Length: 252
Image 1 (cartoon, rainbow, N blue to C red):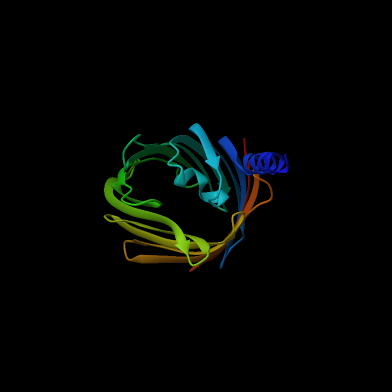
Image 2: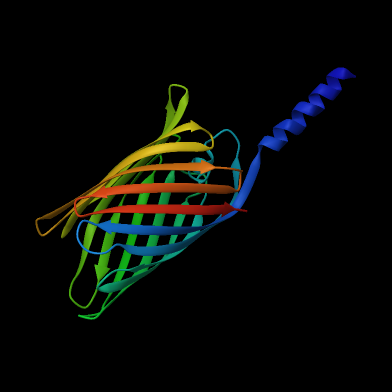
């Protein structure tokens, strides 16, 4: 009798630890503090819908969708109010993990509207990738990144990788990417999961536009207060400005 009660209790506890979600919405506030001139504020909204519920069990909450190979559609909008111009961006995207295989494809398209007293400029951005997952938790993808506006256009090749794995007793995330062409851009980052709900990380991104190098080093952290509610922050230290961002999100 007691064995049956203990077994039932363990089963209920196990079911309680499992959690599934199918969508996430988030909001971000950001501030840019330049070395010269006044600071600028901005905000962003984002959302992701997964084709199937994402199961959360023993993985870090922040990596559940990636480790589940969860196909999704996503969108975001952002607005920044600078001294001399306003910048508004809209994006929609798709990530698709091909069922019963280790292949991955993604696509993204967006529009940026620059509203300035000097001149306006609307830019179309688009990207496409194909990828492969050779082992659990590792994605390697190559693709194309393009842009088109009234003054210029171009298409550059891209490469990126993401790897979530155990290092000792901790989960870690490693990621990096680059694009090559008219603008060389690159980024690397790593996150250490102190537990399934809390991560701290470091990042670097840079670009080279007609000989003008830009380097930004960042620190970041993210905490899930419940299975549904998270808060994350990012501080970037750039050559000409520092940036501060705070994002809250909800899963359901």
